[in-house]
Image (cartoon, rainbow, N blue to C red; front, side):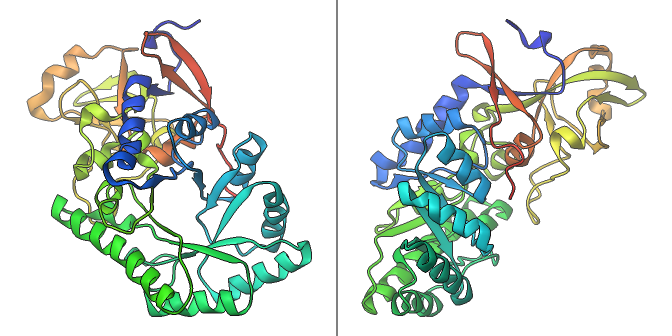
Amino acid sequence: MIKHLKELETPSLIINEEKMNRNLHRMMSVRTKHGVNVRPHFKTHKSIAIAKKQLELGAIGITVATATEAELLLDNGIEKILIAFPLTDRKKISRLLERGKNARLIFAIDSEEQAAIFKEEGNILEVEPELWIKVNSGLNRCGVEPREETVQLATFIKKEAVGKLSGLFTHAGHSYAAASPEEIDRIAKEEAESILTSANACENAGIPIEHRSVGSTPTFERAAQYDGITEVRPGNAVFFDAMQVGLGTAQLEETALTVLATVVSKKKGRFIIDTGSKSLTTEKGAHGNETVKGFGKILNEGELYVTRVSEEHGIVEIPEEAEGIWEKLQLNQRVEVLPNHACPVVNLFDYYYVLKENGDLVTLPVDGRGKSQ
C-alpha cells in the first residue's frame, strides 16, 4: 500500500478526505438552515462512491448532465436522477424512458418541439415521463424565459399530455463571473425569483408546480434562503477550487482537490512541472472573473502560479520577489497544484488518490470519466 504522497507517480489527482467531508456537510446544512432539499450534481466528482455518500447524508437524488451519466448511476443502484440537460436524441430518450419504468428519472424540457419528441417516445413505450421545465435566469444558455414563456410551455405540456410536469429548475452559472459578493447576492436573488415567479404564474394558470429547484455553487446557499425554493443542486461545492476561492465562496483551506506534480526542470526564472493542459485543462476562470491567475496555484510556496501550459508541461515563472523559492525547489520535488476548475480536471483522470483522515492513501475510480454522450 502506498503510504505517502511522495511515493506516487505524477501527475496524480488527490482528494483530502477530511476537507471533502466538511464540504459535504456544509452542502447538506442548507436542509436544516433553510428547509430545502439537496440534489447534488454528479459531473463534478463523477464518483459512484461519493454520490452514494451524498445520498447517505440526506441528498434526495443526484443530478447529471448526460444520458450516459444517468445510465452509470442506474447500473450502480442509484435510481433518483434529474437529467439537467434538454435531451433531444430519440435513441437516448427511448433508452432512458424504458429504464425509467423501474426508477425515478426526471427530464429537462425547454421547448415545445422537444416536448413533442418526449410525447411520441413516451406513447410508444406507454410511459409517462416526469418533466421539469428549464428556466433561464440570466446565464442565457438553455431554458425558457421566466413567467410568460414558462407558462406557455407548461400549458403545452399539460394540453398535449406530454408527461407529468412536476417542477421548474434553473442554473445561475453566470455567477462564476461575478465581481463581488454583492453581485453574487444579486444573481442568487434573480435566480430564486425567476423560479418562484414562474411557478406562481403557472399555478395561477391552473398548473401546480411541486419542485422549485436552483443550482450553482456560488449561489446555492444564498438562493436557498428564499421562501418557496424547495431544493438546491450544487456540484463544485464537494471540492471547491481556485474559482470558488476567488469568488469568496470558499476559503483556500476548504479546497479538497489538488493535482500532485513533480518538478522536472529548473531554468533561469522558472521551473517546470509534469502537469500541463492534459492534467489541469486550460481554464482560466469564467469570462469577466479577474480573480483567477494562471492555470493553477502552487500550494505552500507563496504566490506562485502555473503561468503557461502545453500538453505535458506546466511552466511556473518565478517573480523577482520570490527568487528564493527557485533555490529551494529541487529536481523531483513534489508540489500540489490547486486547479482553477475542479470539474473538467477530474474528467482527465482515471482515479483519485484519497488521503484518508488517518493518513492512509487509497484509490477511488473516477467512474464517470468520459461519460459525455
